[in-house]
Length: 160
Length: 60
Image (tube, rainbow over all chains, first blue to last red; front, side):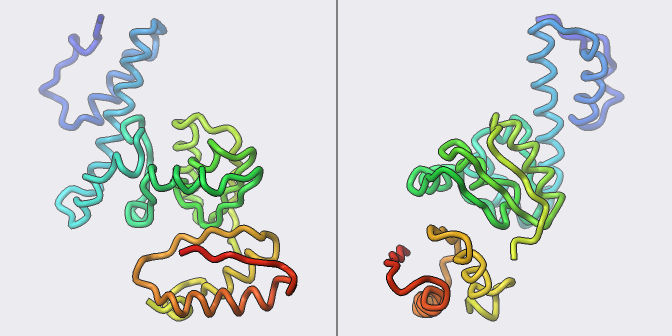
């Protein structure tokens, strides 16, 4: 595969995120399938590097090792804030729950970054996700796009 | 963990809100809760917000 990174001086780059950004600038003018795959891979590198930096020299390293339990598609650019690492439900558990209690419409209160809401969306006709934290909802929107969910309605509101 | 004092919002408030528009409720709670207190809170909330003829099932 033709890779434009060969023309860059890698010595001047410090972190994977910088590499990803520069390569994205280079590849943005190309539209071939190979270039699209490369761009997607670089997006993954950048987002993983961002998530990883949260845990560097931290006691929370335990949760980093559980990342694929929480989101199987973590490497596709799934976003979580610091609180969500504690409160997220493993994807397999959420899937079991969604299959067990599936019904036409579900309201998920305090949805956070959407571990449960995304699973419910694959079994229910319509899912309403409510949370007061707009940052978490932005992450949820990103995660919903990664999982290809289109029947999820996000509401920024206090549940009570 | 006390479901009323250690939780914000309180479980009784959540139940009251949820029962006002839904009959099927799934709660995700930590494991270190007092199950006796959970049953009591559910019982009180159901008595207050559901008609007496409605049957209910609590799975833990």
